[in-house]
Length: 497
Image 1 (cartoon, rainbow, N blue to C red):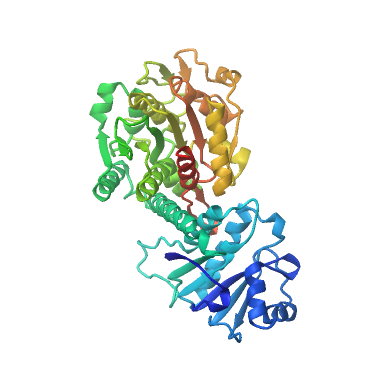
Image 2: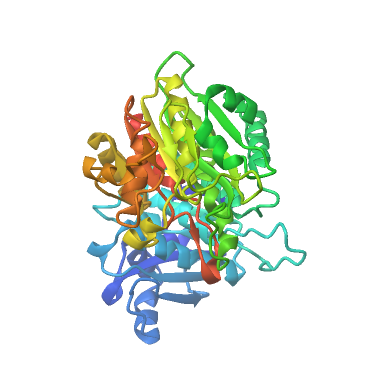
């Protein structure tokens, strides 16, 4: 998709289609009122005749209006004007993108970004428009021999602002939106790759490929022998059951120079396929366990977004990449391993493997003297039971960091919800034979998983994002979402202000 920014009256647009917002009760937005006046009341007449109320997602096509240069007009219902939220705005743009893509209008101009709304500023409207339109038009079909595409798909969209004085601000927002969208696409592509191709070695090659594209990126990849020398017994207890060797992939984006500031560190769980190991999972929907590297995919995507935008920030992305298989050398329930931190862990369930690779990665990143560390992981099914598929779960040892992440998620509509990280939950991890167990039983599974990780993050400010419910869709719309790339990118953008 090609996006551009313009200002100007809707009746003067020379596009195949223009998109005009209408509110509940057939209330005209400012662009709709302007177009209605230019066409001698045609908009109001059509609204009454076609019985479009303006509810969220309502669509009405108009053709060949007098005194309008566009071939067709798409009226879009936006609901009650004062109740327009980021979530509703994304839903509206999603519907518009689908309709335009089917219409044969290869280029269009949208006036949705000209809506006056106190809670959604111009910057947010533009970024949400780009993200939701790219999301709606995303296709992953590289392994299909027959590809179904519209004869004239939407290729170009112009986003309009109400005045020329906003053009510079809008162009910056567009630049940020394109970077975010590119990062989301990369994360979705990686997540949707089949696990027989997307293994730890493949992810390592992807890091090297990014390095070729972005000269400011340094890449270091630790193999299993190097991790053994560092004492990463927890990580290796997971990878040892697979013929695919594990990798610790470290990517350094030096946007302001290596010595100019402490880096933000992102740590992604990269289990490229999770059978559960000896504690094997049920066969139903096991194919979706290729998405267990959603955290790693989001780190890749966030790095690309920041590098596309050339942000002045030092950013480190660390991927704990392994495959969890029930091989002859796999870990057994009851095994005890020593982590890089020196703490010992009794493995009571080999399907709680994400925290085992992450704990050693979280110890390793102390070497970067980080400003903050955020780990992202499809860690617990319990998070889905608690929050469903709408919000990412968050736990943190620093309340101010949690508030910043929460605010970023609200702004970009990639929301999270904080769960408590109280000392009492750590009691569930006690072991009779080691310093801790890797599971704490069924109660509060998301919290006890984070409590386990917190034992390795005492030397820096840290937040844990459990994306088990938000990293992918199941069912008819099965596929990776690219979350939480928008949240992480927005957080980094806000940290620069």
